[in-house]
Image 1 (cartoon, rainbow, N blue to C red):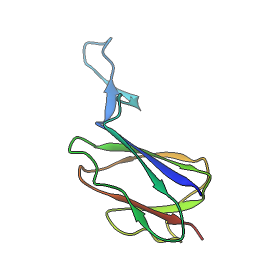
Image 2 (image 1 turned 30 degrees about the vertical axis):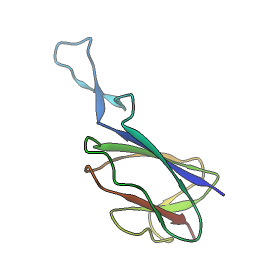
Image 3 (image 1 turned 90 degrees about the horizontal axis):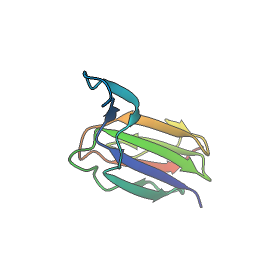
Image 4 (image 1 turned 45 degrees about the vertical axis):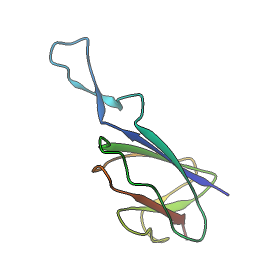
Length: 102
């Protein structure tokens, strides 16, 4: 059975070697939380994101799945292929759901 790995971040890291603390194109670490959701024929939902979470990384492992934020995933929409890693801006306390893709 495949899994969807969800990693929560506060946001983008800041360049501390420059006076203006410009945002970098990488998430600020360490992550605030990490969750794993089993991917199967039934919708699985995450726990609500942490209060400081504004960026999440999702990665599908051994599964082609579909995701949705704040509602139940539909197997025909927002499909993620096996091994794909994506980043999304989110609001705190939102959830993500996952289901096997058609």
